Length: 332
Ligand code: NAD
Ligand code: TDX
Image (cartoon, rainbow, N blue to C red; front, side):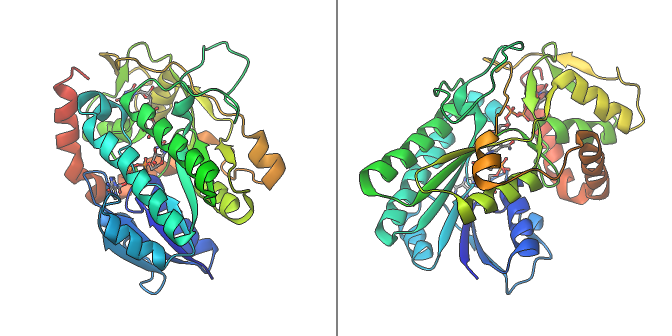
């Protein structure tokens, strides 16, 4: 049994990870989460109290972080400002949480010699042409486009520097786009599902040709547990499930699965600096650590996600109106 500290464990991917840990290990989890607009205590509802503790606090709070690291065997760092559109509107919180927050954790890990796994994104590599035969690998140069992805790139580089300079016991993973339950309605897939439930037409940025490489959040969790168990300190692992789809195809599939005409969506103002395509080559993780995804079929994973949003309107409804008002103000 290990004592895991999970930052951002009330967010989308962090909460999926906490559920996964409770179901698949005998580890104890302490969640540290500031409950920003993106955090939701309800995402952890029903988990056994003897397995999961919740601490409401900020990763930039050094004394609190220090105290929690003193009682953890390993830390998995999910907490971040995570939404590109918000980072274009107000970048400052991205610098505070993604850069200063990660720095605060690194200093605590150094003091306590704590094993740290840093969660990051494929967006640090920038974007690919639609016809580029190559996908991102661990050796692709960093080239982030947005305030969000540049702060995630900065946080990755801090982790690498602390490994090299101070011998920190840390690993990094860069994952592709996640989907599944508990994702905030600001993000592409839950926004369109909840739009259809509300009778609003889905909104596609630009022509909808942009490609994302989708992975179910539960597969991301199993990959992180694999890296915690077998990963080599100082190494980076790319996580992906060969799930490339363009946004237009995803919107049409959501509409079809929800019993609507496939063309019942509208095109809206494109995102500034919109990355064209992300694609992950996860060969290293698969061959060196023996991981493979379980959700091979995007359509059935998406269908289960639609069912989850239909059954859990009480979870997402409180955020829906404010999210749509934010987008409406930007013509999106
Ligand atoms: P999210 O926005 O749903 O959740 C972020 C969580 O962090 C929230 O619970 C929030 O309250 C918490 N948080 C924010 N600032 C904090 C602070 N200063 N102190 C403590 N807690 C704070 O994000 P997500 O989509 O679950 O992403 C989680 C991580 O995974 C991020 O690091 C993100 O960069 C990375 N990632 C996300 C994706 C994706 O598709 N969503 C893909 C690859 C990597
Ligand atoms: O209403 C929309 N219409 C639309 O066409 C929204 C919200 C998005 N989009 C497009 C933009 C992207 O091409 O859909 C795609 C996915 O958008 P997001 O859900 O905002 O994700 P993305 O910007 O790709 O970033 C996500 O994956 C990588 C996460 O939000 C990041 O945290 C992660 O690092």
